[in-house]
Amino acid sequence: MKRYVMVGGGVAALAAAEAVRRQDAGSEILLFSEDPFGFYSRPGLAYLLTGEVPEKQLFPFSAQDFRRLRLRLLHHRVAAVDLRAHVVVTAEGKEVGYDRLLLATGSSAVMPSLPGAALEGVVKLDDMQDARRILKLARRARRAVVVGGGITALELVEGLAARGVRVHYLLRGERYWRRVLDEHESAIVERKLEEDGVRIHRHAEVAEILGKRGRVAGVRLKNGEVIKCKMVAIAVGVRPNKGLAEAAGLRCGRGVLVDAFMRTGDPDVFAAGDVAEVYDPLSGRTVLDTLWPTARTQGRAAGLNMAGANHPYRRKVPINVTRLAGITTTIIGTVGQPGADKDTLGIVRGDSETWRTLPDAIAAQEGFEVNRIRLMIAGRHIVGAIIMGNQLLSQPLYRMIAGQADIAPVREQLLRPGAPIADILAAFWEQWRVQDGNRTVSV
Ligand SMILES: Cc1cc2nc3c(=O)[nH]c(=O)nc-3n(C[C@H](O)[C@H](O)[C@H](O)COP(=O)(O)OP(=O)(O)OC[C@H]3O[C@@H](n4cnc5c(N)ncnc54)[C@H](O)[C@@H]3O)c2cc1C
Image 1 (tube, rainbow, N blue to C red):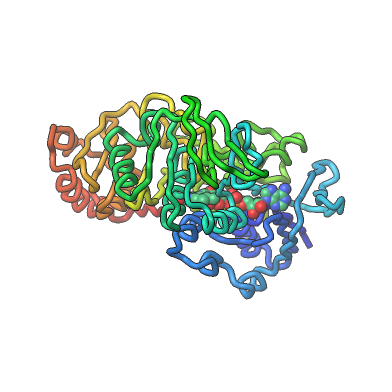
Image 2: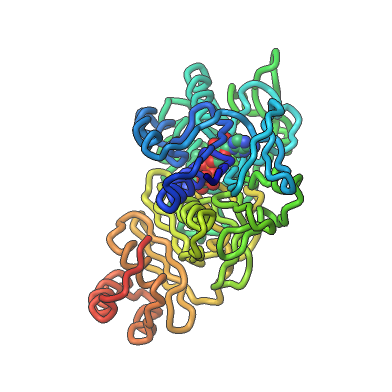
């Protein structure tokens, strides 16, 4: 009987366990997770903060689901991996052997080394424990400062604002998420935040977090301004948890490097999810994604291959349907903008490096209010899109981008100044999907 050991209790590890169980009914599967809350939806934590979703709805697996999988969930941290001996070593020093090992350790928030960063009241949003801590602090905080960029920073801003906390959002640059959004899109988000009572400080950088009796009392900015607050929430980016792999001697770059079968440099060790750095055939480079569906697909591919299948992971065009300041926003493919983003360090949550790739493309856009579409057009193809507000075209656009639809018949129309892009796309989509009906591109 083979023993499969999964390190990590997130969606990548669970998807791998399900895939192994399908292939190898008689095997033993051990899943190590240091998270005392087990398996839950991390993207859902944002909705827990705003109060839209109760905690119990974030747990997609019941006890029965775990029993059905016949896996042993072990709440221990794995501290080391010995590749030669084929064992993992827990933090308590217990050795557990494996035939095949999966590293699905996810990623963690990067915390800047600011004076005062260790004070009580400095928070991040990685897991359930963080979300609970934020909610507890929000009960007695009248004012909070949020630092950072990307999706998680806004989730913190919105979550705190929804709890009645007066939020000061600090941007080091002049606008929100400038490597992904264009000026109009940033302006839409910022205007909406300001309408909701959020105070945005541009070109604002924290020099020091001020404390009183070990707790946050405010922040001092580099320009000398002091903002009094009880909480400082930080979301400047995440880093793959590759320490275990690195210490074991596995090949790593920014994450754990894997081949097309999610296998690391060791034939019996696989990696998947936020921690994995995968090859992207479209750009010819290795990339990181921090997306829930991507982690699930990678986990599934890893699990199948761990159990002996020959199932390559095919990286899809990355997509995220998210909410920015309450505006539903879909981000697909290469949409990057020139210039540096001073608010983030590398990748953030719910992000893909692909989005920040600068496409060699021309932009076509429509609408400057809440409903907005931006297309990135390279030659005969749409290579990326951002859809804000009305989402009628987001799935068709995803299909056309992933399916590399030849848009030559409408390219000039789309690029004409003031073109009714939504109408042109809707008509083109109707034709294309009939012609392309046999091809399915799923998200
Ligand atoms: C607030 C928030 C918002 C997000 N928003 C979006 C979004 O809008 N869209 C989207 O697609 N994605 C979003 N994501 C990202 C998405 O949740 C991740 O991409 C996904 O959870 C990655 O899954 P994973 O299994 O690789 O890692 P994780 O879900 O991070 O799981 C890793 C697990 O491994 C455990 N672990 C780590 N090291 C060890 C060890 N040594 N021993 C034992 N256990 C260990 C950790 O405790 C953790 O439970 C968001 C995430 C967060 C936190």
